[in-house]
Image (cartoon, rainbow, N blue to C red; front, side, top):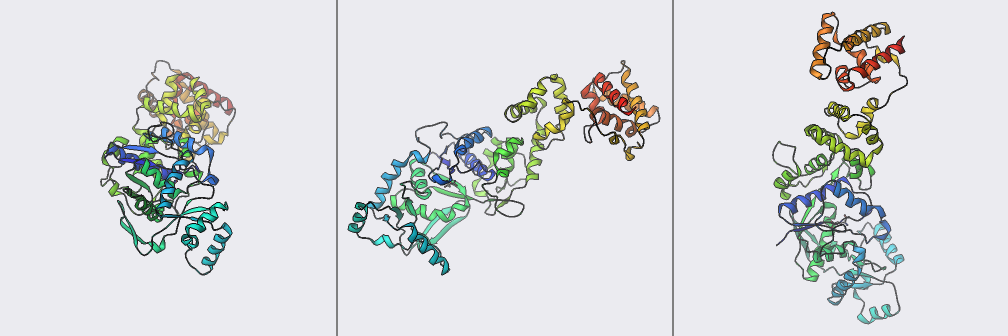
Length: 492
Ligand code: GLU
């Protein structure tokens, strides 16, 4: 039997990092079994809809490389994938349940239901429908329908038994049927509720495995009853634990800060994101931590997903990100930077394109070891691409480097200028630049910091930057000389 999984989001918000982990687990499990991974959009709750969301969701999945085998953007035999386009199907199936007495019409008004709820709350009872309409005679039901009374259709939960299912991660779960509400399956507007549509669609789409957040465990007994009522074989359930923040609270779904889009915008490498979130809640049983997607497909085991919530720690994600940045060849990193800038910062890309390829490459390779997230790139490289008009010369003073007066700064800059002025030296190779400067500084009986700190400041006019010799290497000799002269002028 082909394994079929699905991601079935309600398009109510941007894709959340926790939902991406659910997608990833579905994806890994499916690919391990040569199965099929489907995307279905559960848009039956019309009040909570966000129009951008379904489109955005598919874009994000595509940009992290988790493309469903079938879904709205790549339709196949199970079309349509928006539940709002499948309303006829639900009508056909609800009729079957009514005929078999597994569902019934409920004509209670929302006012009555509100009163009932308030009463139950006041008595400290669980809020549930009191089944008033469940025992209406067929004649009473018909009379109400003929009178055009608005209605919902509810699940007739059987009495006096346990409802059980086996979860791959949590084992057997059983609840007494008295604790399960006669759930509304079809609403007054004829739209199905999530509970009804999810079961019908999972069945019709031949879904064999449901991997989703554990917040759906309390709903599963209702789904189990529906499978039983239709006489359908149940899928396997695997409920994965939530992601929690450092405050130990569940990460809110509707927070922009934890939407995948924001991580992509800040340029977290998508391979790093997938690697990190795969490990949130799943134990690979090794000390290794860096796994490519194809390695994850090989190693992932659904049974080894934990029951307890996993802490989503942004610093850990940064660590993974910097590891990935470091692991790329400069050409690969360059390609990734271009793709990113084209999408999120075309202005910077335009600026960079006006500079020699070699220059851009040297900057990128210098920053490769320090970048945690690539969106820092613009800020860190600003001085390489733009000339400042002025700056605070007190930056030159640095007691640790034994530079306490601007006069000393001038001396150091003139000293460096002289070295650069000698065009018999080779300033093309970083090692050579280092050798020349270190030798000259020591011959003059000076300390490295005494010369290199002012040079670094003169070349960057920034509090933080790569070191002086790296800057000389990147700017080349002439540009470095011009910059030193500019600072000397400013000092005089
Ligand atoms: N539409 C539900 C959600 O957005 C799907 C739950 C499920 O996977 O069954 O969470």
